[in-house]
Amino acid sequence: MDKAFNELNRGEKEAFFMLPILNELKRLGGQADTKEVKKSLVNNCEELPEDVFTSVKVSRKGNSYHANNYPFNFSVTNLVMAGYLDRPHPGNLMLTEKGRQFNGTDKELNDRVYKISLPMWDERSKRNKARKSKLESSNDQEADDITETANDEWKTKLLNALEQLTPGKFELFCRALVRKMNVDIDEKIGVKQSGDGGVDGYGYMTTDDFRTTRIAIQAKKWNPSHLVSSPEIDKFRGAMDKYRAEYGIFITTSSFTRDAIHASRTGTRVITLIDGDRLTDLVAKYQLYVHPVTTYKLGDFFKDKE
Image (cartoon, rainbow, N blue to C red):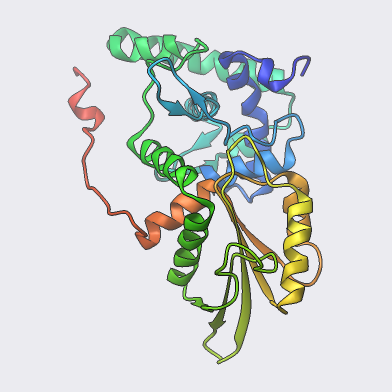
């Protein structure tokens, strides 16, 4: 790649994503959800910035959005159209036989995919002017006329709300979340904002075989552009040593650098990393200070004229 990823326009980013998506799905066993694919891309594709899916932009209308989700999603759709990927169910991607057997270059893949997908896009645009408008806007640098899905919108709002919390309240929130995950929180260790010995929470988890594990919690309320680096992991591990914790949970509203992920997996005690994206999933799973709202989206049956 001649230019850095962030210097590419949206169409170039879309083309760039295709081969790495295939490669990471092969690495993941041929099938994975989109979140796993994105994390694998960040961890293994050195040409991608580490905040490629966490960096936030603000549109002219004042809405926050993750700009690189759009070229990624269009890249996936192109690969599906061309028969290299399949979607067994929403949010899940699977390599087809065609995808598994491809071993060419990125240019070869892009040429083959676009040869099939571009005529299909053209046909869709002829049948649906609204669809055509959306496709044309995908080539612009502004995303004002592209709306995020309801799922992405509420997650963005949640992360924005968490970033507005005071450090003490965010630590309280993280302890409440870990408590929902069946950890018995200690009421004395890690509950003070100063003199906590480097931990923001501490607790105990008893497994089915009656073995109790000591768990340390670290909470970092950081802006998405400020990634947690490996020195922060090392400091947390030192705090774990102080309290003889056998397990660590590091929670952030941001994300982690590749070195931080590697540091969390070294040594005898693995530290579980919870970034902003996974944090929103856990909040939804345990319904912590949120409640679900059910809605429905009309299917293509109502849109097609045939």
